[in-house]
Length: 100
Image (cartoon, rainbow, N blue to C red; front, side, top):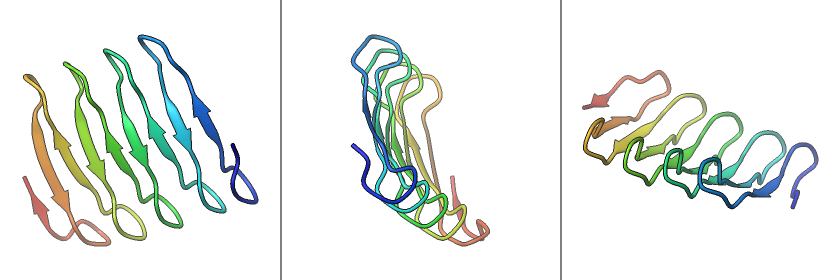
């Protein structure tokens, strides 16, 4: 499913390793991804003109939650898991504020 003039796409793969679900909504690179699997499970949404993204990985190893709100590199990270659990939040155009 492609919605947009250039690279909007919709992908869905169902498997144990590289299962993913992608939707791109916008003129260039806005995307929505969802990976369901044991290792690389992820959920991503990009909303914005360049790199704004929202990622959520649900799994035992690399579970993470990313949200970028801003024109370039503003990001919001949450990792929930036994090994690399972390919480990061950057709200600025150039990462002026960081909560870790």
